[in-house]
Structure formats: structure tokens, C-alpha cells
Amino acid sequence: MIKHITIFTTNESNTSSFITSLLKDEKPEEFNFLKGIDTALFSKSEVLKFIKEEEIHDIKTLTANTMQSLKSMSSGEQKRVLLKYLLDQKPKYIILDNPFDNLDTAYQTKLKELFLEISESIGIILICNRQEDRLPIASKIYKLEKDYLKHYSSLTEYNTSINNQTSLERLEIPKNNTAINYAYTELIRFKDVSVSFQTKKVLHQINWQINKGEFWQLIGKNGSGKTTLLSMITGENNKGYGQELYLFGQKKGSGESIWDIKKKIGYFTPSLTDNFKGNHTIEHMVLAGFTDAIGLYTKPTETQLNLTNQWLKIAGLSEIKNKLFNQITRGEQRLVMLLRAIVKQPLLLILDEPTADLDDNNAALFVSLVNKIAKSKQTALIFVSHRKEPNLEPLAIIELQTTPNGSIANILK
Ligand SMILES: Nc1ncnc2c1ncn2[C@@H]1O[C@H](COP(=O)(O)OP(=O)(O)OP(=O)(O)O)[C@@H](O)[C@H]1O
Image (tube, rainbow, N blue to C red; front, side, top):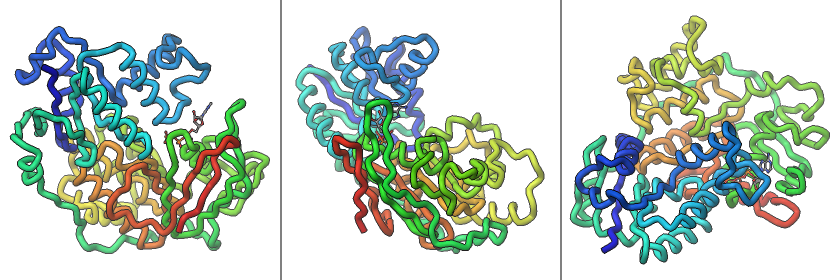
């Protein structure tokens, strides 16, 4: 008989080593039934494996039917081609590692239906750290506590075991008197900006103005152009040349320095965490945000030390500030990276799917810190997310809506 299993994880769980153990010959006892059985893995790490294979060995497995490279696909598109490939292999079991992360809500709904449909013939081992991601098919429920699997007899029993701790200390956001002095209201302005890649039209006549201290949420389906839009602000994309794109008052391509722009922007996306080997202390990681360096190479000023410690206190990380980055949990790492991006008090802070792969508790903590930063009005924010994060309080929403000519922008306030 096919088994369907749900394993709830938190950011304290050793999820990746647990998944590796499921695929090895020596499995946790409860999973011995997988021995010798074809088992597929649907996860972000598998996408990365195929990207590497394509880049290093020029092997196009997931993208065999397209000219486009896997790396240049949007994160949602990458997950779609991976799932199609895996299901074509007709596995007996499939491990779904946080399958709904990075996917738009319409596709999440479609996927849930698909998983229910395939569950007739394929066993599903769902690993998820958000409650809303569970599927109504599990015959067994576990929670992975570090490396230990704890069994629950029902979902109700699991639910009552969770303790929610979501508030941050009621402390004031520190003000950095050495932050960039900027006298104007307008930070960024797109006027009828369009972008295409070869024949693919991605953005169509975008009009969007971001003013000082505003809190924006950016939403839109997978592939609608959110990352492309952000990359035009951060300077990683030169499609803005010759168009009416104004970054901090300067027209794109009018001789502005990319370093000057970067100084005014804080940027965070979860994959940035991978750039850090983790052998710096938390305090040093945050301090290094003043210079955007990986480690701390210059002696910090008294003001920088002071600000860093105030931020650590707000995020509740003061007591562990001397721990190494690789010794703390994923949720704590995420908060540290947020502090690192905010500590210099940039004019604009971009958070690209910052809560992906956080558990409910840590996502709520992260969101409450973001709301706090937004309320201080010292920094404008753009928060990209597919999930409806409860309690997120943006001032306005910009939605990219796909059309055959590329996505148009709808401003929802
Ligand atoms: N260098 C490139 N070459 C070809 N197509 C590209 C390139 N970069 C992006 N695209 C395409 O542009 C479209 C927009 O991609 P983008 O990553 O901006 O979407 P997104 O809204 O961020 O998606 P997601 O929510 O899935 O992350 C996608 O269809 C993508 O495949």
C-alpha cells in the first residue's frame, strides 16, 4: 500500500541531512520501506544541481526542449521544469521539500491538486515548514527536531504542540546620523519602461515611483518580471539605458556611478546567505554591512558598533552576538542578514522573497521586524513575496500582470 507522510520542519531541523539520509541505503528506520524503490526529490537543491551540470558540463537535462538556460529562468519556471522532468521518470515515491516556496498562488493551487491526483499512484513524502503547505493525504505525521523524528498521532496533536513566539521587543529603531543625506522625496521612477530578452517581451511600459520612506510590496505570477524589475534598480541589468528610468534623481546612463547607487540600496535575498562560509561572528557580519564586505576588514567606528548593538538588541540576538554565523539557526541567520542590509540605513531596502524557507514562527518574527523598519520611515522598502504573509503591512502594492506584450504594472493601494 502507498504511504503518504508529512514531516513538519522548523529552522532548527537538520532538513538537508535528513533528506540525504532518505536517499541513502542506510535510512531512518521509519523509512526502510523506501529501500530499492525509485524515489525522486523535488527541491531547490535539485534545481541548483541541474544548473551546475548545465554550466560546467553543458548538459541540458531540464531544458532539453528550449534554448533558454536553466539559470536564466525565473525561480518558479525552474521548479516547474524540474517537476515535469521528475514525473516523466515515473518514480514510486517523491520527496517534496517545501514544494510551494517561490511559486505563485495560482500555481500553488494547481500543484496541490496535481499532488492529490498523483497520490493515487505515487507515494508522497512532504517536508514543509509552513502550516498552510500541508496536504490532506498524510497517513503519518512527524516533526523533525534537529535530527530526531517525533511522531504525532494526528494533526490536532501536532498543532497543539506548537508554541508561537512572534513578537519583538518594543524597542525604537535606531537612527543613524551618519546615513546618506538625501534631500528629495523621489527615490526611483520608471516612466514607460519596457524590457525584452531576445523575442520575449517581459515588461511593458512600466510606470512606478518610489518615494522616501514608502513601504511597497511587489507581487506577480512566476515569470512576470519581478526580479527583472528589481535588477534595473540595483544596476545588475543594463536594459534601463536610453529609457526614462531615474535612480535617486539621476537618469540611467547619464554617467551615474554604480557604486554610488549601491551605497543607497540594501538588498537581501535568501540565496545571498550561501555566499557566507559562516566563520564570522554575528556581530561582525552585521558590522560588515556598513561596507558591504563579507568580513570585517577595517576597525569599526564607535558609532557603527553602537548602531550594530542596538539593532542586535531589537532583533533579540544580543545574547548570541559572539556566536559564529554557521552555529545559529536558519531563522536567526535570516534576521542577521536583514540587519546587515539595514544597518547602514540605506535609502531603499529590497527584500526579495525573504521569508522563503522560513518556518511560521521565524517568518512572523521577520515580518514584524520589517514592519518596524517600515514604520520608522527612514528607509523605503520593497518586499517581494508570493505568500500572503499574515501581518505584513505594506503602504501600497505593485502587481505585475502578464500580457502578450510583457507585464504591465497595476498599483493597488
Ligand atoms: N537572460 C534572460 N534571457 C532570457 N529570458 C530571461 C532572462 N532573464 C529573465 N528571463 C525571462 O524573463 C521572464 C521574467 O523573469 P523574472 O525572473 O524577472 O520573473 P519573476 O517575476 O521574478 O519570477 P519568479 O516569481 O518565478 O521568481 C521569465 O520568463 C524569464 O524566463
